Length: 409
Ligand SMILES: NC(=O)C1=CN([C@@H]2O[C@H](COP(=O)(O)OP(=O)(O)OC[C@H]3O[C@@H](n4cnc5c(N)ncnc54)[C@H](OP(=O)(O)O)[C@@H]3O)[C@@H](O)[C@H]2O)C=CC1
Ligand SMILES: CC(=O)[C@@H](O)[C@H](O)COP(=O)(O)O
Ligand SMILES: [Mn+2]
Image 1 (cartoon, rainbow, N blue to C red):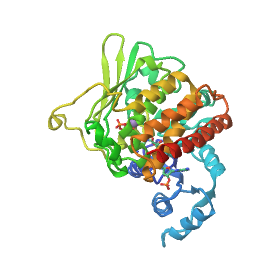
Image 2: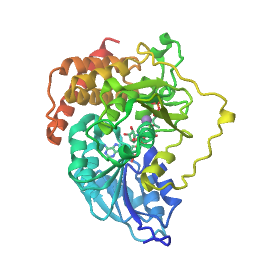
Image 3: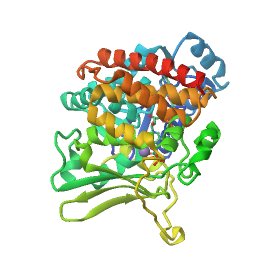
Image 4: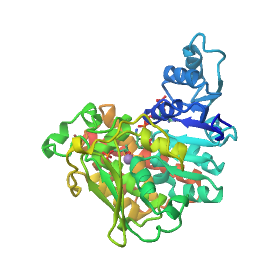
């Protein structure tokens, strides 16, 4: 129990060294009597992890291999006391997600690599703060069934889905994994910033650099999701994410471009009402909402000054400029196998682009080519191993297609 009589929540942060992980620890640190950090995970940034574990007094950390464990130990600050327990490897990550020592898991690993641990947290019946949207894209049925079967409490952290969750009717907000759309809801409206290239002349897109693609106009995020925002594949992944979270058919999910990223998304009701959630583009707001739900806590976010902002703009998405958005709607229509392929191809293509091995404009070309090559390949929805095998196959296919694209570039 904390001084205020609340029971202390014990939090595990998976992907602690990333953008979401850092913001999560920032919110937690503002409420020391309310939260206790149980475990943290990281992949490459061992110095950051050591500093975080020392500052938060985490009981355990999870790292990918023995070399990382040695780097973690070497980076442990003098005077910080004894090392936390250091756990190593992918199985340790899933085991830590399921460990009864924590009651809440922030799933903030980037990409499909975050699926097994997020699923393990759901299967352990935890409060799952889901930032890792790829988990739902790759394994929508499996993940939502796990939430239902194991009584997990799923709270969307992705800003748009968190906004929709806040705008849904009270019954909908209590249901953690609905099987049908909330009563009275006509449509979900996902807002999209349009990213850094919303108005860039199309002929210039061939030459844009990774740093330009990662320069999001409003949000500070990891590099992979930043590129996804530039191509709008991020919004495509979010349409699929909304489909699973809110049991909403694709035909009732719309995307509206809103360059200011102040309206985080909206719910349209049968009577014509549209409810929106507004706020600064700062992920500490949805993170604090998920941590404290159903309470509200201070998150360190500055107040929104609408008069100073002056205007809010909206426009339809341009599918010619953003072909990835069209590909995502097509994948959702085609089924789970296509969603796995869409995500895998995108992860491989974005990684190649960030490493300087693929043109920006070849990202949608690579994804489309993998979707064509894997069309009709079913993904057994109920098995993690089968889904991961489909993922591996699509990645191999993507590497092959990217090799051909760059050879012909
Ligand atoms: N950033 C944001 O504002 C938002 C992010 N999201 C989603 O949240 C997730 C995290 O995004 P973001 O924080 O930006 O990403 P970052 O790239 O900033 O951080 C990713 C985290 O995952 C770890 N990681 C990377 N690869 C692996 C791997 N193979 N196995 C285990 N851990 C790994 C990284 O460790 P290390 O750093 O040590 O290498 C890091 O802790 C993504 O799914 C993203 O789509 C959703 C909405 C908003
Ligand atoms: C902060 C967040 O949730 C991101 O997913 C954000 O939505 C990216 O912005 P756009 O994809 O709208 O550019
Ligand atoms: Mn988002």
